[in-house]
Image (cartoon, rainbow, N blue to C red; front, top):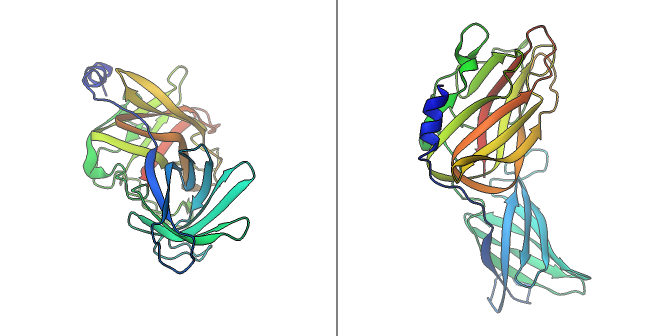
Length: 293
């Protein structure tokens, strides 16, 4: 990618922002499987990965978790289950239930025997995240384009597809196709870090949880640290700095990361800042970017 081209395109990019969502939790005080909408609490809630966070209108804290679906380890089904609590000082209530589309419904219990049914309506789990069809442009720094060990895939229909369950792909046991989706590799030379790639979306997209992979051929994982930036008000803003955990060799593997907050942007940049590959002419390798709701 030519730096001049990138800078010109960046100058006309729209905006980015972050927010939590205000919703109403409706509840009753009779546990009979039907919410009678007798009372309500105004909440500001968000998701950090699978973690529910937020506050009520009166300042009580909200914390909890949404399960991954179809997990054999926890016995979950095709609809997400959740649990969270609302607590302020010594007062604490617990909420349990299941998500059906945008409806979160279940039962609640208080510390002194209180109980009832509740429901709330939110699109936290159905919000649109970046997919291939949302990409209008993809760029990589020139270092990935000089041939030899330095290479990257052109934009293809496998970009941003969440293709596996974070399990390692051992290259001594199976063939791993690096021609699909995002894949970049380059030799590290003095002064050529960070190495970056860029994506432009057709509109501001919500992003918080994402997955990115690297490779270890037995000489160290080819990614140690990286940053996630969004284009905001005419300049790059770093919204997350991450460390990629070492992976077993010889394998390709992705890992899951969470930004500190939900962000909305129409342009992103991910930059490799260090590698654990210790060979002469060490390498950086990134692959398999995808986003999760």
